[in-house]
Image 1 (cartoon, rainbow, N blue to C red):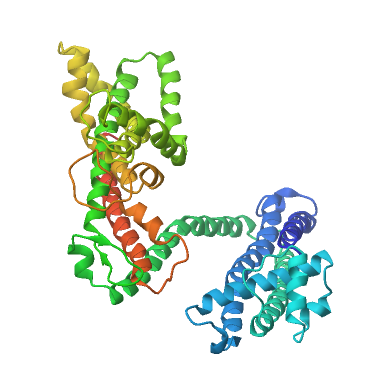
Image 2: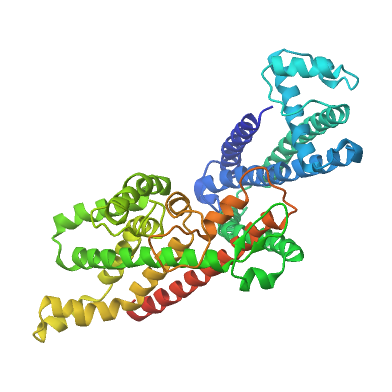
Length: 490
C-alpha cells in the first residue's frame, strides 16, 4: 500500500468518524440539539481528531525512525573487508540502497521475479546485467556482501512498511471506536476539541523553534569535530584561507569575513539611500494612485529568485563595469580586469535589498502618528521640514531595525556572490578586485566527492555556525529596536 493511499484511507476513516460521532450525539439526545452540551459538529470533530491525530503522529515518527534503524542494522552486516581501501562504509551503504531500489524496480517492471530478487546465491554478473537492462542505475559492480545487504535492506523495509500500515490502521480504528463509545449528550465535546486544537497549534508553533534548535545542534556537533582536527586559533585569528585536501590547509575565517562584510557594506550603500528615499516618497508625497502602482512594482524585486540576480550580475552589470573601468574602457583607467568583483556583487545585491528597506521603512513611517504631522504643520513648518525634523527622527529606530534586517539578509546571500564576486580569499580594499565570502566557501567545501572526516569539509560547518551567530545577533538587535519603537507608538 503506497503512502498516499494510506493517507487517503486515514482521511476517509476520519470523515466517517465525524459523521458517526455527530449522529451518535444526536441520537443520544433524541434528536433534540438543545439537550446536547456542545454543538453536534463538536462531537464529530472529537471522533475524527481522536482517530486521526495519534495515527498520523505514529506514522510520522515511524517514517523518520525506520530508515535509521534499517540503515544501522544493515550497515552492521557488511564485513570490514568488503569496504575498499580509501572508501567509507557510508559510500557502501549508498550502493546497497541503490541495489535494493534497483531490485524493487526490476521486480515492479517484470524484469525478474521476487524469488530471483531474494536469491542470495544468484549469479552476480547475470544479476548486474539484468538490473542494467531494466534501466536501473548502478555506480559500481555488485559484490556478494552488497547483494546480501541489499536483500536484507529490502526485507526489513518491506516488513517495516507492512507493520507500519497495520499499526497505523489499528490506531485510527481504536481511536475512532474509543471516541465513538464515550460520545453522549453530556460529554463536553467542545472543551475536548478546543484543547486538542490548542495542542496542535502549540505543536505547529514549536516546529520553528525545534527546527532552529536542530539546525544549531547539527552544526555545533560537526563544528566540534572540526576543532578537534584543526586549531581554533588559526580559524579565528589566522590570516590565510588555503584549503588543501592533501593536508597542510590554512583555514582562517577572517579573509572570508572581510569579503562578506565588504560586499554587504557596498550593498547597503546602494539599498539604504534608494530604499529610504523611495519609502519617504511613497508615504509622504505620492498620491494614492501612484502609491498603489509604484509600491507593488517595487516589491516585485523581492520576489525575483537570487539566481536571476546572479545571472544579471554575470551577464549585464559585470561587463558594463568592465567596459567603464577596465582596460580600454570608456574611462581608460584600467582598474577592473574581470567582471567578477566586489563592486559587481555589491551593486546587484543592493538592488535586491531595495524592497526590504523601502517596504519596512514605508510601514514604519506610516506608523508615525498623524498628530505629530499636524502639530508640526500647525506650527508653520513646511512639508519637507516636517519630514526631515519630525517624521524621520520619530521613525529612526524602526528604520535602523529595517536596515539591520537587510544587512543580515545581505550577509547570508549566496547565489549572487557565487556568480559575481569571484573565489579569491584575501584582504583588500579595492572594490574592483575579486573576493569571496563565507557562503561561497561553504558551497565550495561541500561540493563534489568530499570526505566528511577531513577538516577541509568540516570547516563548512564552522563557517556556517559563525555566520548563523552573526546574522542571529543582527536579527535580535533589529527586533529589539523595532519592538522598542512599536511600544512607543502603539
